[in-house]
Image (cartoon, rainbow, N blue to C red; front, side, top):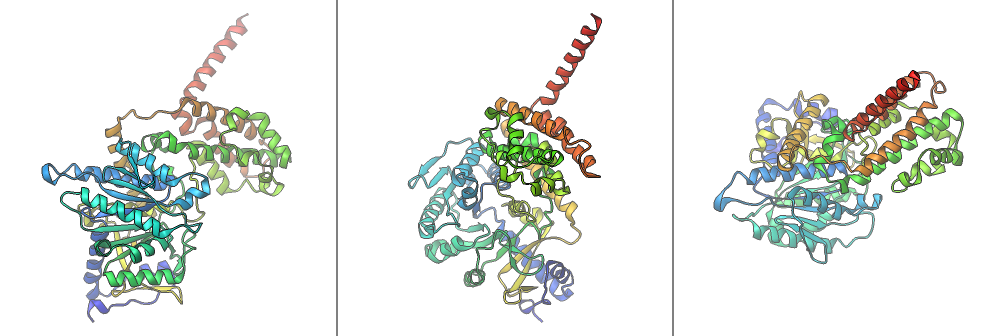
Length: 526
């Protein structure tokens, strides 16, 4: 049976599908591997212009940092007439920004400005900002009735501008889309014939959850079945691969960035500027204070407005005014919420917040760090080596009526999966190594001592830790059996977490204790 007619068994979940890929008949194995290799090489082609639709959370920014750093490294390999400046187009997804009250476009511009050390130049009524051949385009807000066709026009303008800047000329486009398909489908349908022809590959991030069948992910719920069918029709017509990536399929199992980034509370300041980090820092402080005072409220049977009064008595308004939201909202201190605080998940979250106080603005429970699923798609001059050794692009056909899927040689769709033998630990180590490489390059460019902590934020965190210590100390002996030992880890991180060392608080506390001991000995002598 020729490879172009191969179809595996129907699968109801990801485990079944991975087994079917592992057990592909020997006569089809080379052909299946060949299709994977070609798809990976096309979607990671360093010579194509890559277009990334991106959100504005920390994992999104770290992914964009990885791509820009890689492009800078690649362009440095060429000299003379062959030399090209880093080139990419970033489309801001304003949906996430709308939820946290920020502006995704402006936040992405700030990240790019920090990386390229360039001011950028605004165009098209400030909807496009060009940093040389790296261009940021304002996308659409998927939660409202945005004008998709207007977005298509400015995206086309940005692509054509970058094409003209590239020498030798770039003639291929690889489009990396987010979880909601409508803008991508509108672009394919309404763009120019030349740009449509230039499209050589698509990746789609976090649109599907394949754990127990073909289902929308938490982020892809706005999509309709017809959208997926339309995408398949377009891909067949254009003869291009569509590679689906998502955190679950790629064994990205941990929701905390500190798991993947060594000394995260320290090095985050090299990756991202303080203006970007501030809302994440504020969100973490709000969540940490809420946890500690909920626990104290449960211990003292103090709820609602009485619990809020307790917060305000131990946290000054000048410290908390920029960020206090849930921690001063009586509705977050009901008896049920306070007594439900002592769960393993909430305690673990508090440990992370105390150690590295930088929260995601829009976390999705059970679907961690979706942008990290994109890390293997980073453009490369040898993607078969960098990505192909660790991952396989398994060609797949979806049957939407039954929510099943099967390995197939006739579909344009692919799922990026870790290769056999690569478990959660090995995937985690791969991500850690990738991000460490990015960090080393940033330290080279910015200087190894580029970390600068804002004194105001250090003072703010010191005040927060005092309030949290008071709240936690008052819980001793009042918590359910087994909880005391777990909460101890929160208390330790509040006193001596990574950020305490980064900001100098631990050193200052040690000096103050030493002074106190000297004063005590001196007083005793009298």
